[in-house]
Amino acid sequence: MKRQVAVLLGFIISFIIIDQLIKFGIKTNFVEGQSQPLIGNWFVLNYIENPGMAFGTTFGSSIWAKLSLSIFRIIAITGIGIYLWRECKKGAKMEYLIAVSLIFIGALGNLMDSMFYDFIFSFDPCNYYNYMEGTGNFETCVQQIHGQEFSRSVEVRHHGFLLGNVVDMFQFNVRWPDAVPYLGGKQVFPAIWNFADACITTGVGLILTRNRSYFSKGSITQKS
Image (cartoon, rainbow, N blue to C red):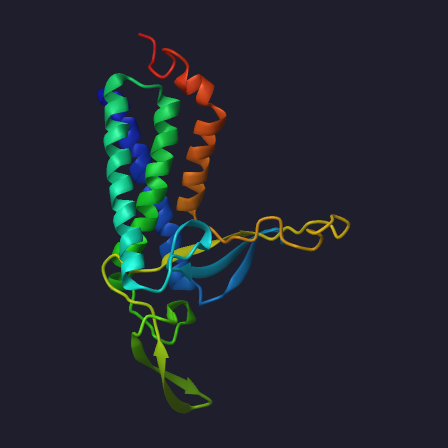
């Protein structure tokens, strides 16, 4: 069991580091809305930030909406962590533990953005990712335009601990053929996502597609 725990911890820590390194790289080297081809023109880096859930899903402008989302993530991560530990003690198959770990990694990776990024990176009220109507939170945006300084009051999102945006950057730039009814010319998968989202999707996908292997009688634990 000790070896299994060590392997899982190494896997989780490594993937969390990868997620955060990608996000730090985007935050420090890209400007808002910047795009760059990654693999041809069909897979691109497209830097955005969102205040909500995976794949850019928003959750309202209220401070309580964002806090509720972050608290839900904390509860879910805690529950997944406890479940993962118990399954590890039972001697569950490593493949199943990896699948659950991927969901844990994804949830924790996005939570870390919300927890710490407003402290690590300075909050810019001029950045349109921080604009949010309905918050009642107004700040002054000061910009230099053609050598002249202009200031204006803008309504921005609430910011601080558990209130930060999630950084997204990957996008499939693939469109349906024009001949396809209703979908012709539209993007096949328009969402912009990050490494953490990919971990969650992969983990859930493994559990759904491999559930017979995982959950059939006696198969979830390794044979001695």
